[in-house]
Length: 465
Length: 84
Image 1 (cartoon, one colour):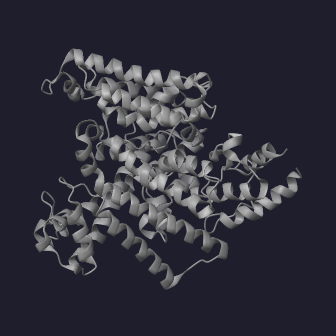
Image 2 (cartoon, each protein chain N blue to C red):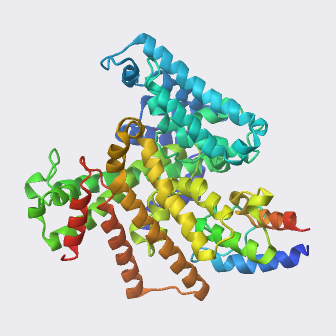
Image 3 (cartoon, each protein chain N blue to C red):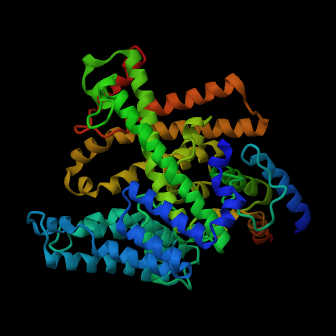
């Protein structure tokens, strides 16, 4: 019974039913209800309706929705360049719409002409793109160009576009084929869920049966996201006593990590351990809810891609957790940092080679991703302000990279030996993974003022020091 | 290249790096093993290492992208490219 519910997208009967008119109507109604519950945009609801009515015109509708997002974007930031207060400015709006479309189309044209790039730039296509992005970010301080500061949102999506070009797979594609994932109506943050055109096309439903299967899988994820939302709210209310939630009278009123880091007096080692584990669970739930809604939307549109979060709390190794916690972010780091480093570093020993590649991805790549996500810090904070702002994140990235490297080496060894732990050993492994991520999470949370020494003090207090 | 023999050798190797409970025995040459959830990114790195050690393959020089190694056919094609 439970398996029938959890595997509803695999039920052949349901898949057959979902291809008929009543089934499609029911699917549409369920999708609308769930997307509405998850606060999806009106554009997403409209795009899905049109895609379900005319599946063969999917990319056209999704590209039109992308244009709709650009046209309807809140350009209050556009005023930044002119130094005026944030309010609607018709000229700034027009200028920013034009700039955004020009940048996206310009990069597409550049990618289309990849073969004509100078040899040196062709050798480092993504690096070239990012240099261009930083130049454009610098221009954001000019009047009417303020919107460029938000280019970080499309930076990694454009990176997948350029990567596709460098692999010789862009020929025959049009701007329409790329616009729908560059400005995704299915939602997202700076991480491209569903990666780029190549990955999305490989997972695109090719017939009505695959489309129905994909949509059912999407519905399942959106339902799961509803459950996780309630669980998160329950945790926030009962454990942390956060306001505006029901059950607030029954709360344990536990402090958050931020409160414990900032208030030495509130620390007790047992409460500290409880809080860091609970914060890890909260963080997993938050990421899972966001990812399920985005991937669920993608699946409803017929792109049956992998989940972003898949049972990370059952991971038996640090590297497995990394793979399961935020799949598309990890894929980005592997694709743009790990492989290029690993393939180039042939002259060093296998362990050192792995170490270099892991540091390039989980360490430097991870840090760079976050720096690019807040370009105003790099552009305005000055050298010391910049170092101060990112120092805690740098510690987190270093610890993460060391953990992943050791975990990869251990996993390689256990694979070679064919070790498959069970029972208590498995439980110990899972507990170890929880402890590692719970401890380093202290360094990844954002606290205004950054408080490097306080974070260290809190971490040491957990160990009774 | 003796393709059937190399294929068998490759299958034996791949079965040592698949995810727990998975196997490549039933995979066709075209099956994308990463997309099918049979192998993960870590296994792809082990495949690269295996190709370098056993077939003297230099992916970077040959311009082969790691994503092309996600299928048995793709790996065999890469080995063929490296043949003198």
